Length: 521
Image 1 (tube, one colour):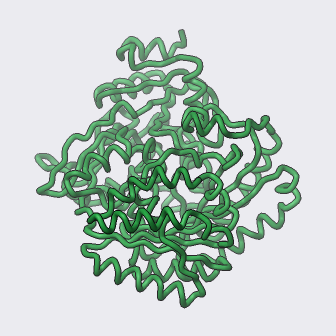
Image 2 (cartoon, rainbow, N blue to C red):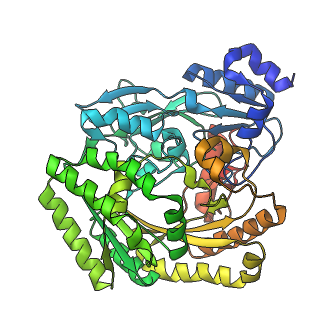
């Protein structure tokens, strides 16, 4: 038996330690990369078990990586050294407290965004930011460690913008609580009590500690929703329209696709799939007349209206009343019309909103290709220029892209009132790995092409992706889920770098917490 496994086996229950060969292989990879094999997967059920594991690893100098739902692609939870231990947090998935009077919810870090949302919905509340599209698997702890966007981000910002307190096990095995809960005799009702200690552990990719609990604020569920869809001939007008919609805080979700990515999504989804999702749309509508009207509208529109669409933009708005939702939609239409946008049926955002946490089948291409997104967050004023800089990367690498049949696309989104998100996406024919096969729905996986492994193609994608990251860094972009893929250590100004390395040393003096994350030793 491995010496590390022998040590932790003496301290922890055998049922939470897994050394199965297939499980080791599965947990040693993410959506894009395969790392050195870990020596064990540990699935703690309590904070005490997390602390016991950290202390055992500290005694032996064993590195620890922490994993939530495993939907990442930036090597954030991949080991950088042999004999690392991986902590799978998904067994700690409880909802500890829902405080409707003081408007907060405390959950364990392994709770999925879908589980949290569905638990809160009957109570008429939700968190302001309420998860990623992969929230069926993605966890609250993972979303806070990586930072993430989507549901609610148009008005409420990122996951990290919507946290009151976290409970963290540090690299010394100590349990630290932040926000108002950092003081004696206080509940986790407020983020700020002196310096913002909560923010230290958000977006840290597990480099500063293991989040075991989080407290998030609660807001009322919206009384009404509005939906719009638009087609644009070029990216510039769409980016300008989205920026203005964002500045005026008109949507909770506003996102768009380039022609290639739009075609991918249309291939993935079928009329049959839309029909299955109609039940979700109908359930969301109030009144029998509205239910019939919206159901018929979506069934009749199908997807034919997308056939000639180039750049497509979709919005979902939330309001207290139907009148307010209609006002928001009208203003969005005015903004888009001024940029030459053509209104489309609103069926796609309706279906998405009614089924927010669908299968993760879109982690591969429509034909079974490998998929890799990259992203940068830039101020609205820089969106068009940075997109042009990204296009220049593809122009320089056109022969390589053509050689390996690498296709590229873009997802565009906005966050709060200041931010445009540019997400270049790569697709290429290559063998799927164990994580893909584990995560995709079985019937969907069975329909896909089974491509052979093409190591040179993966290398080509990695090289071009790295050039994209370099460009984004030169343009001053920010990133979510930094992991081990984006510039952080090398990009920081000296005072900030000195501070973060000092904090790392104070919390994790032996450097066992996810070595290499954020570029920190």
